Image (cartoon, rainbow over all chains, first blue to last red):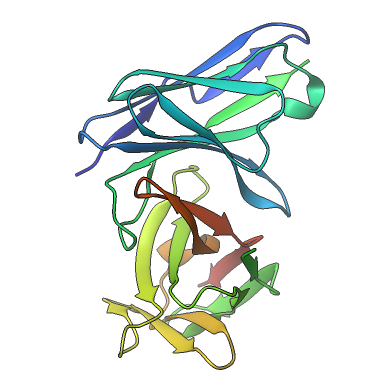
Length: 113
Length: 117
């Protein structure tokens, strides 16, 4: 079974802090994704990476950056956390291929105070 | 641009009844794919079923089936013989643009399904 592990289930940070969310997958997947989930809006793509050191902006990249130095690890960085970044963050990975599903981690519920 | 619409914010169903969760989509691409995911209260997203636009038959996976009506641009999820463990949030998603084989998913707003004993 594919295992996607997010470093924290719950995280509380303060406004202005630099926040790191970590995601690790154990299936050698090339593609990795970061989404945020808000009630009534579904999931929205922040950034994705199709290979090591490669990254592409998603629909809502403002205020975020990412890092992928190793194939198994994809980090989401909030450069200067703000209260409107309070949300559920979900990481996913997959193999290339149009009909291949994305496999998700358990999510990190982030609160910015 | 792709768009997914799920018009049912919440549904309540008696155990053992069949359930249909609605999903309509909009795209100008001739080739596309539709995914359904389940999200229990614990938070993880579980892949349920996939339908490609060129697939000749409706997808099925155990108690899950997809009622795919291409002309109406709908891809409804059908759950047969519902169980208490089916209570969860359900998301319909469409395959979006592809870069280097990595496809973006466009999600609907979700439907919260509650199964009553």
